[in-house]
Amino acid sequence: MILVTGATGNVGSELVAQLAAEGVPVRAMTRSPEKAKFPAGVEVVAGDFDKPETLPAALDGVDRVFVVPPGYGPEGPVQERTLVAAAREAGVKHMVKLSTSGVGFDATDPLTSGHRQGEQVIRESGLAWTILRPGTFMVYLYGYADTIGKERTMYVTEGDPVSAMIHPRDIASVAAKVLTTTGHEGQSYTLTGGEALSPQRQGEIVGEALGQEVKVVERTKAETQAEFDRLGWGGPRLEALLELKRQSAAWDWKISDSVEKITGKAPLTLRNWVDENIHIFG
Image (cartoon, rainbow, N blue to C red; front, top):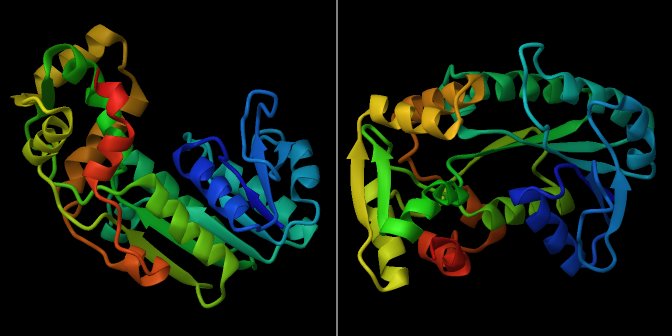
């Protein structure tokens, strides 16, 4: 039995669907099972990293776990420590952690630092482990959907990186292989899409899918911050995200072949993702 934590997220939901389609016994953990919708045959269980008493039932009979912590606070990777303790007690054999590419490139932003500490907890668990380190998700474009829909304009920030963006389904496909085949124990994989795209090119791809031009307008960092403040999106988490974006310019363009090597298929393209989600752009 495979337990998928973060089962309603961008990657977890794709992973649950893939495992179910392959007939692999899978259990989806969510804090609100009554609200979740999963394919037929998926076992759904209530579980919360912050409520350790919920984890034994979620882990009962499980031998592999996909680890997606909900986030990192100043106290560090508490969720991973809690999960590892329960997993050892339950007899889990293999843990696969969703991390971030910045760990492999020595990034120091708060989000990457949290994942780095989380990776260490998984590595020191005494269980077999595999680390998946994806770069920027294609779902990042959700942040531009409103202005693209209303103005056919994509407002980016000066210095926004060229990015080898990855489709969450490709991350899930790698996770499915790692969880159901051997030879991945003790490995860390950087995961990217197959092409490095500038913000300008990203806007062009959206425009091509819409059949209309999408203008890409560059803002200063101060202008972007002012817009976030206006929308009420400030705070430490936003600051951490902006710092990650700033640092990622040094590596986010680098393309890894791990997706194709592990799954046997070339990564999905940004046009694939846009076509699937065209409705968000109005």
